Length: 626
Image (cartoon, rainbow, N blue to C red; front, side, top):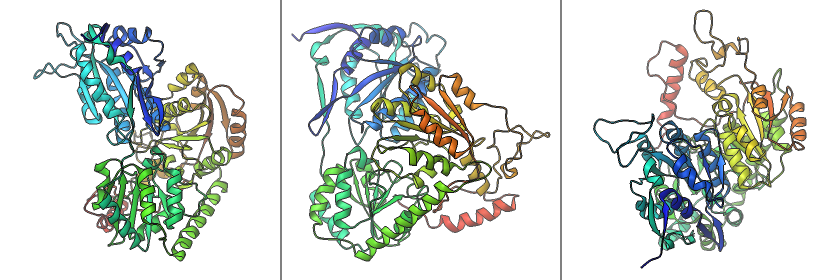
C-alpha cells in the first residue's frame, strides 16, 4: 500500500508547489518562487494557515489583487517563463480584482498561478457577504469569469481532486506554447478539509522544457523561399528572448544579410547598433523598419503573435506578393498569414535554418540600404532626445535622459499610454532584458507592480519604471509593497495632465480630446477640450506628495537637467524613489503607419467627416486573412 500523509487540501497544495521545478539546457529552476496574497474569509483559514506552516514557500503581501498578478507576470517575464509565482485571494471582489491582470498574463503568454477562494462545496453555508447567486445554477461563482482569460481553469470540490488537477495545471504553466494564467478555484470549506495524500505526490518533480524542431520538409520549403527572396525581413518577437536565442539571431542575420525589425516584446533581440538592426516595427514602429517591411517579399517572423499593432491592422505588408515564414513554438501562431509554419523552438530552428542557408546572402546593396535607413533613424532619435522643448520638457527628452543614463544591465518598465509608442521607437536597447513592456494588454496600472516583479527576478539590475499620471493613479499602492519587501525601484512619474495618448487619438479623429483632460469642467458643465492647450483649470492634485506619502523618496523636477540630477541622486538612496516631472502632452515621437480606428460613418463634425474619408481610403489596404 502506498505511503500517505494526512494534510488539508491547502497544505497539500502548498507542499506540492514547493517541489515543482523546470529544466532547460541542463539547468534546473524552482518553478514557484513564492506566493503573493491578500487574506480574507475565503482563504485565511485554508491557504493562510498552510503558508504560515510552510516557511520554505515565501509569502509576500501586496495591496491590490490585480497588482499581485502583475508582480508575478513581471517576474515570469524576466525569468524567460522558467519560473513564476502564485497568487491567492479571498472569494468575491478579491478574486475578481485579478481578472484584468489574468487577461494580460494569458495574452502575453506568461505563466501565473491564480488561487482564489471559492463558494462552499458542501452548500450548507453561504459565501459570507461575497456570494453571486444564480437562480439557474448553484455550481456558478464569481470565479467563473476567469474561464475566458485562463489557459486552464478548475474548481476543487473535494480535496483529493488536487491529485488530478495540479499536474494538469503544471503542464499548462510550463508549456512554452500554451502557458498563461491558470486558475484553480479553492472552495472555503475544501481548503481546510483533510485527506490522506500519497507521499509520492510531494516528491520533487522536474518539468523538462524541450527545444523541438519543425518538420524537416517544411524547413526545406522555407529555406528555398528565403533563397528566392530579394527583400526579406525578419520580425523578432518575444519568443526570441524567451528562447534565449538572441545570439543565434545575430549569427543568422549576419550570415544571411537579412535585416531585423522588433516587436514590443522582441525589442532587445538585437543590439540597436548592429548594422542590420532596424528597430521597432508596426504602429509604434519607426520609419526605417516600416519602410523595408512595406516592400518585403518574404517576412520571417520569430516568436511573434503578429498582433494588430505589429501588423498595422494588416496593412504593413504592402507588397502584393509578400509571403510569410513563421517560426513559433505555438502552432496557432506559426500558421498565421498563410505562412510556412515552422512550429518549434526559436533557437534550435534558427541554427538549423542557418545551416540550410549556408553560403547564401541578400544583395550587398540591400544590406547597405538597411544600414543607411537604420543610421538615419538613429540620428532622428538623437534629435528627439536633445530637442529642448519650451515651456515644458517633452516626453522624448525625458526618455532620452533615462536612456543615456542607464547601464546596459538596467531595466526600463512601462505598459500604457503614449510612452510605449515613444519607447518602442526611440529606446536604444543594449541588452535582451533591458526593455520590459506589457503591451499585449496595454494594462494601465502594470508599471509599478511589474517593476517590482522585474526587480525581484534579478535584484542586481536597476529597474526604472516610466509611468504616466493616469496609469499611476490606477495603482500607486504598490509603492508600499516595494518598501515593505525591500525591492527598490526608481519611478519616473510623468504628469501630462490626463490621458495623453487617447487625447492625441481623439484629436486625430476630430473630437478635440473630449473627456481626456484632468481638469475642472467649464461653467456650463461641459468638459474642457484638448484643443485649448494648457490654458485650462487643472485639478489641484499633487502626485509627487502622494508618492512621498506612500514611502517613496521623491524628487521634483522642472527641467531635463533636474531629471538627470535626480537619476544620479537616486543611485545613493536605499529605497524606492519617485522622479516627478511635468511634460508637454502635445509632443511625442511621430507615427509612420496607419492603424484601424473605425471613424463615425456619419457626423455633424466636418473634422470627423474628413477623417472618415481618409479612413475609407486606407481600410481597403487591410489583408483579409491572418
